[in-house]
Amino acid sequence: MTIALPILAAPNLARLRGFVVSFAELLSSTKDERSILESGGALLAQLIARDDWLPDEYAEPDPDRYRQYLIHCDSRERFSVVSFVWGPGQATPIHDHTVWGLVGVLRGAERVESFRRDARDGLVADGPTALIEAGQVDAVSPRIGDIHRVANALTDRPSVSIHVYGANIGAVRRSTFDEAGNPRGFISGYANRSLPNLWDGASPR
Ligand code: FE
Image (tube, rainbow, N blue to C red; front, side, top):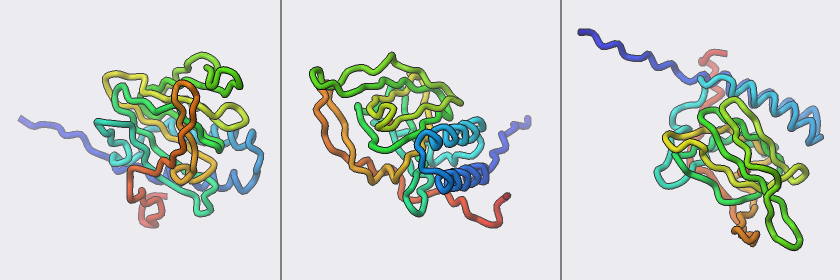
């Protein structure tokens, strides 16, 4: 009896490289946040439309908590690209970003609760809970709403989303919030020590 083994294709890093080059060009062409979110969101939607480029080691869940892997940082720290990996039922605390951000779901689905500050009541819900599914892109920024809690919407398998932020997000001092809205400072860092090599001249262009 012959057992057919699946042929594992190498991750298509040229797709990720094309994305980071296009994003750097976008940021060189405009400083306008609306344009960045609109055009950058379209670039991210293109990137996550195909699931053939993310190396497995940046999609590895952790049994205890969601993971945040840096997959690219612009040399001037104008933007960073991060893969978020959520095990079943995992969620972030309520947190802010302080910079613009784009969230595109590559695998599975995520539940996003948005909040805003209210002088009297602390943090209040800002609209209904949203479900973002594979292929969809969401945005955050201090201008359009910057505080949320994100959870894996699936209870039986991991979800993976690709985020782009207007800074090296793992080095930004920002805040988590308790239910009463009391902030606590944090710097997220990243789960990984090495990055995918996008710049190998012998790999397909
Ligand atoms: Fe977030």
